[in-house]
Image (cartoon, rainbow, N blue to C red; front, side, top):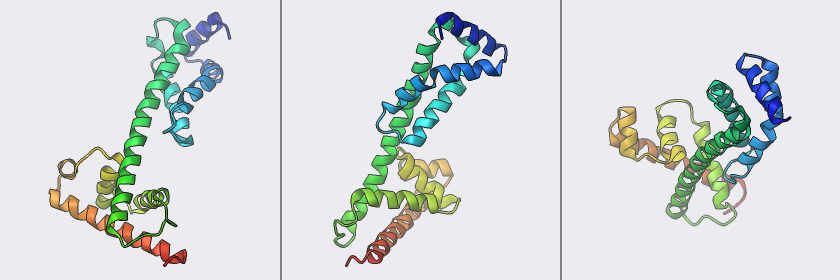
Length: 190
């Protein structure tokens, strides 16, 4: 697609032509995907999110694009910014889950290497996802998956006392310990 064809396609897309949106997507989706794949913290689902969100934002703001010939560079910039934001969030969530797994490792009786840190992180994430929707899950999600809020900040956000947040987190930690031990026993590890 030449620059003139891209400009014409953008004009048609601004006029509401769905086929123009489709043409722009087909022409540029591989470039956007390559940008997202360059961020190692992003998994396959997050790469897809970057691609989709990049095009949603670009098509929503297309009328504001002053130089249609710069569409490709503009699109890549949107993808890069979105990838960076998701990558930062993934690293923070990963660190929080690893911190919990390490905390459990030091507080539990000697856990054999058969249950690696990565497997424990997976267990923690599964347990969080498996919690019923409600105040406990929201508290745990804010603390371990978002990873940027302290117990005091979570309490303020949820309108609770800090002790209520701390108690929910302690109950969750106990649940994780029980689940890790159950999985160890189920695997035949003594």
